[in-house]
Image (cartoon, rainbow over all chains, first blue to last red; front, side, top):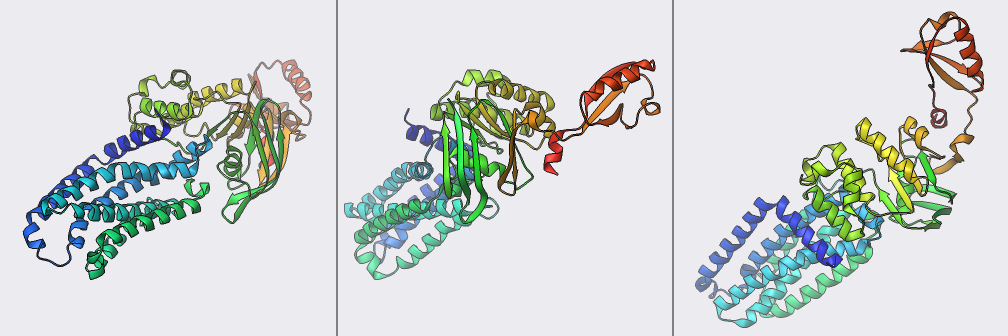
Length: 215
Length: 268
């Protein structure tokens, strides 16, 4: 088994074990919100700005799931597990990549399913790409700074500032999504978001130093 | 041949310099016990040697495969012991059966790590660090939280390894350090104050405790500490003369042992 696959498998096993109740709540919430959104489709279709409404469900998933990933990361940092892995010759940047990849491996299919459901319900295939690019961009925009800020916190368990980053990004995005420009060119906004979030991820990755991962 | 070389090393965290101008050469196998007060830089030294911390200046060289045991448990709490050891084996290599036997983990294998006691977690933590057969072992307070039996077992493991490998071992337990050390490295305020074979440490004063059948305070100058009558000599060969003197008085000697620890003076 490759190291990446091993890390992903172990990571998700841990996520499920430590957050089984929270995870069940999250899935139930996303399913209910999706059903609610589809049910209200006939009303929503008459509104000029629909991106802000449909992006909310995938974003809530991104924020809540990123908080679970951050909690595992914070524990691994404070328990010295990351220190041990680095001392065993594993690169610190690769370790951070593993958390982001593990997050995205679960996030992307779920976001795709939600986006597909919405676009099928609207009878507009273009909406799938528009929604998916926006959801993916914001998810990556949430997880990267969340992990980076967690790594800078000395007592992250006591006051997990990083978890609120996702909430702040979500509210900023939802506020902006009511503006006309967000809805006239949602695909461009989505692509821009993906590029911006990738640039941010690479930039934070570059700034990450091994001592940030020490307990 | 395994070796450790530190040449003019300065290191720390961000802009905070913790260790300054470290120079150390270790070529021979042995137990090199690193001593120092809290904050002296023992953990930082091991982190620098392990490669986790990069030196700000200077040069670090380690020849040979390295194993590191931090003073934290460094375990994934949500996994069972066997799952965790298999995870580490897949990631860094090694043999799970060997460490399970050495650290007596058979009864714990199916238990979740978060449910273990601190001492049990320490054993699992050490097991993961001993998975690979290394040339250089960096052990940061490895007997912390262990009961006396397991602390003694771990010391035996370390002692046996030290015949062929280089072991750098930090501890606050000076009796453990004295039992185990072939060399002592003393850190003080981020600098290496002393690095010497332990048998070269000579404080010029030895506290000897004698357990005997009679009251020794009537015939020797010293004081009782519990069952032992403790007196000081400047030369260990003086003990023979004292024993002869005591037995000539018709007092039977049950035990003679060194009460003081020369390492205590180093930390004062």
